[in-house]
Image (spheres, rainbow, N blue to C red):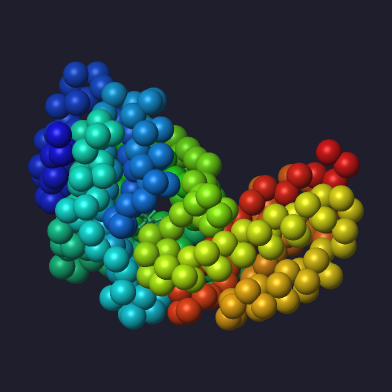
Length: 286
Ligand code: PAF
């Protein structure tokens, strides 16, 4: 059975108020649609730990720093609703744009500091403000108890966690494992924009990351590992590699070696499509 679809905040609030009166907990999965197995795994995780599940679909204009990226973003609402039908999702909230940004809307939520100053921050100016703003609104509009995000957008997960804490929004932010194709390619709505033959090549990103992470964990110095990975990616058909960074998993500070819990994060372009990925890097001597 397809879930109820609501587009107005007043309708959403009426529904969540009834659930609350019945003492039910609410899990939220915020998305921009074009749902893939990664999103579905978030909805399944929400269903496991909450009585009610809301999936939101809103292609948020404020987080796109390039108009053509916003325009090309896949919009597949009917398919998305079909995919959620068997997961026990109670409600799909697809807000009309004025339910998020009404006439005269003037407020920006901005997370400052080391978690937004690096990687996606400088490459996508304004992106995290757009994410923090819309996610704050979705947290407040749904009054959810728990929100589920993929670790694929690792920096985003840190930003929304910080934002919820800083604004005292009573919600638990839960990061779930990245879901991958058999090739290792991280699932992403953007993969839909790649021609089929490029999809297989795009898996080279994760492969190069795994090689570099294993060598770093075995004591290899980071700079030559990064250089070698960039070379491998160029040979695999990637264009610009915006970053290929070893960073502290908690602060995102750059590291020369995984001397503490570390993450390898990368962004690279293939055929006009920007792909990102990140993996855990086991600590030295662990
Ligand atoms: O990860 C996404 O799809 C978006 O950034 C999010 C969290 C739904 C906010 O628009």
